[in-house]
Image (cartoon, rainbow, N blue to C red; front, side, top):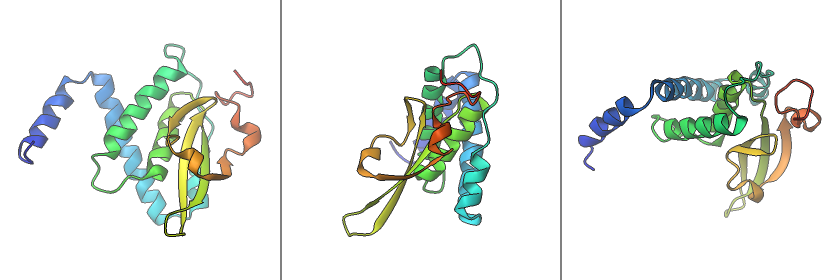
Length: 164
């Protein structure tokens, strides 16, 4: 597709989406941009603290798997189209914030590994209880060094003190 036609095709697809999906994409765009800004301006420990707030009350009209699937779709769609390189950190933080706003507690998993040149590489992936959210595709290649919230709270999927 020529570069002149791509914006028109994107606009046509945008208007074919349901209003809920457009709202979710807009929210993901704002959050991923704020995540990027936070990651380039704040120390990582402050970014994690901002992302560690507890979830709101869970919604009764959607299952967590459905909410997770729509969130994953929105984060990936926006990450491909922002004018910066939205890596696992931006995507993971965005997914966490969007899911927290929908009452789904998540755990951020931070891992490290050596790349092909022997340099240290880091990766962030997100899970909601036993459900994969984002970044888990290659998580097995990394050694887990930290979870946020810490592991003793990680099983609390809805943030209400109970394992569901």
